[in-house]
Image (cartoon, rainbow, N blue to C red; front, side, top):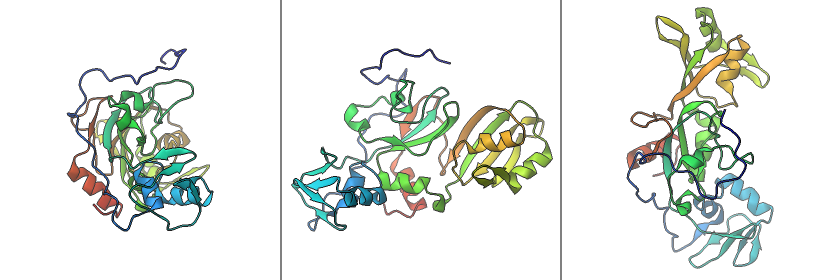
Length: 276
């Protein structure tokens, strides 16, 4: 385990070597139309939160337009309006979509009160581009592999919502061999404290190695893969997410990242029934 640092870094740590893609601007959100933009959508494009959560902020009276507290749904923002959330002025930012190959000993969060390394520390980006960026879902500190980060609140919300059944695949290494009947049990369902968890697929990665298996899920519970194996009496010694929503880390070294290309962004949005 890395030694505890006594003081927080004033600047984000840069990943060693060049990032996996040349710097380029994020995809710009649509401009405000002549009739204005619904307030909840405006908050989403500013990276504040998804639209559903934005509605809650509006109802709670935490949003102002031109100094006026707004609580009714359907209010529109026009060019020149000043929008504040919790007293802080916000503006829509260009959308940014990042694919990272998450390393071990890294926390999947935007900030850590114990000053441990987070995935944000690995992003060699200007602060204005990192503003509003957050990881989609969560990987354990020592789980590696595919991780998406974005400031597109609507896309992130839908990717994490169970109704869209986003496919996730993991490569799991256990201390002891996994028996064939245990693969069957993973597919049939493992009782956990938060309900029965089932793998869509559970197979050996290699016919000659029973300590390494592949698991496919569409659920996204906390520590689900580890808990399923632990319920069978197995200690997980290695866990990598190798596939998420059709994305892999092919060509991205551990701890590195790249921007998603327009084709990948369109496919993700179609996957969760968003336009564009």
